[in-house]
Image (tube, rainbow, N blue to C red; front, side):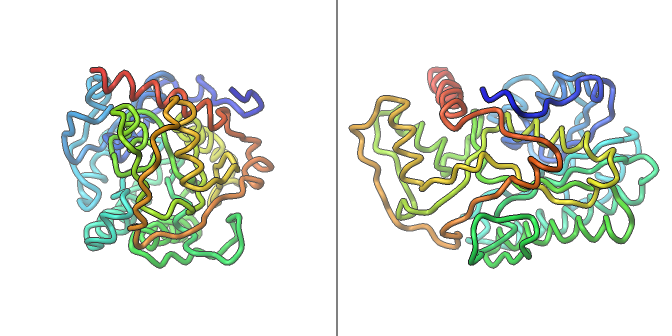
Amino acid sequence: MINNGRQIEESFWKGRRVFVTGATGFVGAWLIKELLLNEAYTVALVRDTDPQSEFYRSGDFRRVFVVNGQLEDFGSLERAINEHEIDTVFHLAAQPLICVAHRFPLRTFESNIRGSYNLLEACRVHSGLVKRVVVASSDKAYGTQPVLPYTEDIPLQGRYPYDVSKSCTDLLAHSYYYSYGLPIGIARCGNIYGGADLNWSRIVPGTIRSLLRNERPLIRSDGQYVRDYIYIKDVTRAYMYLAESLSDSTVQGQAFNFSLEQPLTVLKLVNTIQGLMGCTDLEPDVQNTARGEIYSQYLSAEKTRRTLRWRCQYTLEQGLLETIEWYRKFMER
C-alpha cells in the first residue's frame, strides 16, 4: 500500500455515537465495518432487509442498532438522531444506479433529493446533538464540464437524472451550512469499487464475475468513456477522516474530491482486470448501448491533499487484487 496518507484516529471514534444512512449498500456496509473496528456506537438506517448485503452476510447487523425506515420518512430520521443522541452523521443512502435513474427518475429524485433535505433538516432540528455531518456525493454532481479534471470550485450542473440528484444533494448541503451553520463536509468520489458490490451492471464486479465464469466481459459503452476509480477501503477511511476534520471550523461547509487521480478508459480498466486474472484471451463484448451518462469525468484531489493532507493508500492494482480475491471466494461459496 501507499503509506503517505493520513490515518484515522481510533481514539476519536471509540464510543462516539454515529448514524449511518444506507447501511445495507455497498459503501455503507464497509463503513459500518470500519466504525465497528474503531468501537463507535453505531446506528444504521435500513429500508429493506437484503440478505445478500455484506451488512447482513457478515453478521454486522447484530452489532449495531438498526432503525427501520427510509429517507423519505422524516419521522424515522428525527427519531433515530434524537433517541440515540447522535453526534456524527454519515449520509450515504441513495438510489445509486444511473441506468435505474434514467428509466424512472421519480424514485431517484424522491430518495436522493427529498431524502437528503429530510436528513439535513433532522440534523438542524437537533443541532445541539449533531456536531458533524458527512454527505457522500459523487463526481456526477459536476455534470458535463468543458475542462477536466473537476475541481471543487466548478459549478454543479448535472443534466441527467442521477447527476441532477447529486447536484441537488450538494446544493442542499451547502444551503444548510450557510443558512444554519450545520457542520457539514461533502465528499465527492469517482467510481467506487471493491468486494461486496453485487450490482453486477457496474463494470468492476460485472467484469470479475464474467471472467470467473470464463465468459467475455460486457462493456455497455463504447469502451472509451473515461473514469476515476477509487478503492472502497480508501473511501470509508476518507469519510471518517473528513468527519474528524470537521472539528476544524475552517473545513466545515466545504466539498472535497477524493481520488487516486489516475483516470483511464473503461476498456483499459477491463484489460487491467483481465491481466490481473490471467484472462487476456477473453475479448470484451463492447455493446455501445449506454445512455444518459457523461462521457469523460475525473477528479483533481489537489485541494484535499493540501487542506486535509489526505491521499489514497491503495494503488489501482492493489485494490483490484483484493477485490478479485473477495469475488473469487464469494463465487466459490
